[in-house]
Image (cartoon, rainbow, N blue to C red; front, side):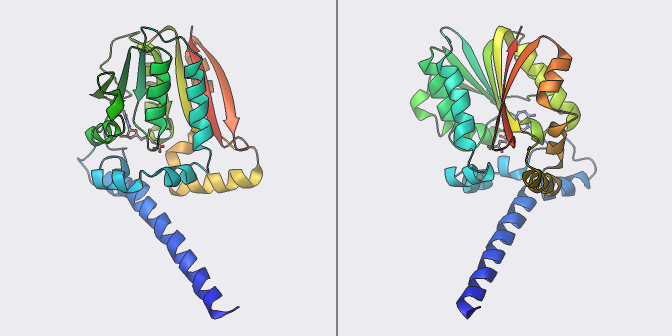
Length: 263
Ligand SMILES: C[S@@+](CC[C@H](N)C(=O)[O-])C[C@H]1O[C@@H](n2cnc3c(N)ncnc32)[C@H](O)[C@@H]1O
């Protein structure tokens, strides 16, 4: 091997290790440290610093980074939700986005909802900085969008007030009992016939992908693995009754979009 090739291999290794370390510290690492500090528990304890610290939010929120984190399936996943919204009649209806997410999912969902006639969009997040950051992407929709600081697992909204609820990659970050609460709150706030759009990880069909995905979850997001079995969102919704669910999977089953209709 030539010396420049050796340097390149080392440089690549160093770069990937640094990125991995950064994400570990900004996600699970901080949660582990928090868990060791007694008395600091709150309803926000499970939220990673990359979603609460404005500097980190701005550092990470770049479309190519977000696309890479979701193995370049981000666009397809968002497009599925957008296409469902575009084919809905949302005249005089309200759309809720429960929890902010990086990338262009929020502007795309807002645009599609308004194009389908929605009269108002609510964006709820437990972290104020996330709402401020999301609002910076939605300037052209001002007057149509409300930003509310609220907890997906104990929402202040009344029963049946929205017709659509979009939850994009939130469940896998919640402690298991809160996953169920978030789903039950989503159902409580939806009007009859209303739709819940859920984007999430799913158990991959390919063995090699399953092994890589399992390793990723064990290291970075151990709360996500339950979506493969005990907290599979479709099974959870079906157990709650009153839902009709359709699931579409992506990238050999690694991701899923669930469209759940409240009966
Ligand atoms: C949707 S998740 C992850 C999204 C995904 N990793 C991405 O950005 O594409 C991150 C968001 O959920 C919010 N969040 C976490 N727990 C929440 C809760 N209980 N209620 C409302 N929002 C919550 C965080 O503040 C953050 O804005």
